[in-house]
Amino acid sequence: TATGDRTAHRPASLAARAAMVLRDNDTGTLVTASPRLYPHMWSWDAAFISMGLAHLDVGRAVQELDTLLAAQWRDGMIPHIVFTSDTDYFPGPDRWGTDNAPQRPDGVRTSGICQPPVHAIALRRIIDTARRTSAADARTAEEFAARAWDAMYRWHRWIVRHRMPDPCGLVTIVHGWESGMDNSPRWDSAYGGVRPGPDLPPYVRLDLLKVDDPGERPSDDEYDRYLWLIEQMRRADYNPDKVVETSAFLVGDVFITAVFALASDTLAEIGDEVGADAERVAELRTWAERARTATAMSCHPETGMARDRDVRAGRWISTESIAGFSPLLCGGLPGDVEDRLIAALDSPRWTGHPDLLAAVPPSVSPDSPDFDPRQYWRGPQWPVVTWLFGWAFGRRGWERHASEFRAQGVHLASDGAFGEYYEPFSGKPLGSTNQSWTAAVVLDWLC
Ligand code: 2M8
Image 1 (cartoon, rainbow, N blue to C red):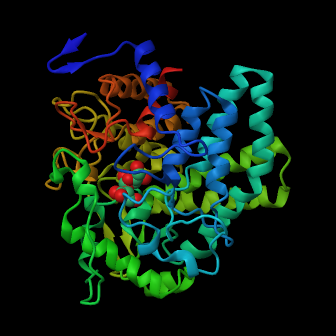
Image 2: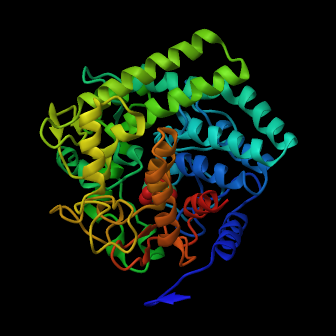
């Protein structure tokens, strides 16, 4: 069926196409984030991809996380990119220059920063999917969980040890790339304080050649800052504390903080199921509580929206982005405040906006002056973000919201292009097509 110039696939055909994307992007041990634009493994992409793979083959899903965990740094950090041998992405491993970092693992090349800690959530989803499929699949998933639990615990511990330096208690990031929402207007003011030096080595962007319109990607000015921050970290040998001490960009990320709370609770719950060390399980619950409190404390006294914090400048960031709804992921707000936040999410400023093709939240409110409907993390809808909120809503017992997000997410992606992101009014797929995590969440919605 066709609406406007969009073709809508029926569920069975959409699921088959999603499975095909995951198979086509599979190199054998990892599924690349997308075929051309991102020919490597990304940390949070891999988590979502693995739960999509679980619907096709639980053993393969587990292998995806194994590949990622094999790249975990010795101190516990899970790096944001695990490089394949493909050389058609910039910045690649040479530019990152992590080969001399003492904590990096052997036998694999990686970037030197991290991404949102959604991995325990993926593990939960894989176990739940496997238990529904067969006893043998359930065993595969549970055995993996028992085996991988300590590595995931160490990842969470790394975050607590190295990324909670600010009294506000938010998890801090040292690069917009760590947020996963690279050029979100959330980071504009903090990036204002990043001034690339004259000794920034020259470089050529490759991403612009791989999208229809360069306007869908971050600007050259933004890239100079991204690369300058890498230069600074490289000079600090990727020592995590030195990086936090010296980075021109240091921001408390409320979305990551809420994800960390949710994932820590989830990992504790899995720990109970697989008989993990009770003290470590208890620690995770304490960390979750700390992060939940910090998330709640960040809320703007009038709007109720959660805020990031520019640690360097010592001020709150009140951009009207999807991250404002972070407390809904992890809870912790008083009932009436939470109800107001849900009402705001449903309102015409957000998912209730009358011109949206699908009622899922855009990355920035269409009514905000920062909104740009085609620009990456500055307005388009991201199916993967919708999945995360929908899953959390289901867990919190908000079935109506969870199933609405699922139905509307499928509607958005029913063109079968598996866009990286979507223009919210026309539903045009933007950025990359056949993006693996989009295929993975669609598969999960449909199965
Ligand atoms: C985007 O980020 C990478 C850098 O990490 C890029 O633009 O080259 C982001 O959307 C990020 O969240 C995502 O994990 C990555 C791969 O899909 O692409």
